Length: 209
Image (cartoon, rainbow, N blue to C red):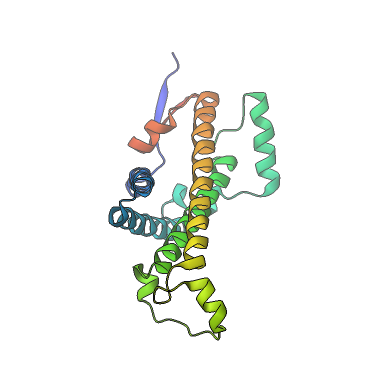
């Protein structure tokens, strides 16, 4: 058996963020399906807070948490993806180029889920966007009645539009999560390391040269 050394990669806040996001996204998905509106909304607010934290920490955080450590050029990304076919791709202590792309896509996906969720809630006359000062627009009365319904300016077509947009964003996130889990499995196999355990302990066990 090869000797291994322990290398610190993920700081505690990144690990807490990761697993908290797993828990609250699952909670938001389940409560959305069973229409537990209040719990679903609060899970969404927590996800938004986690998302803001990750973006800020990606700019000022520890070495391997920063975007500058795992955002690569298209050429580097393609080179890494091609190297997977050799079954001996280059190893990276932090996110590899493909993993870096996935992190960015997950952030984009979470942003889309969060924004459409807030807008759908606003269309029902609820949430922080509904409480914010409204911007007055010149909309013909007939069009306004058709688009907004007869519920004090809320509901109707706008409600339906944002609900569908929110649902589409959630399905996009589920696709990304599936790809992410597949990537973790492939990377763990090819590099012979337990990435799930690394996200728990913050450390990676690497074979010595």
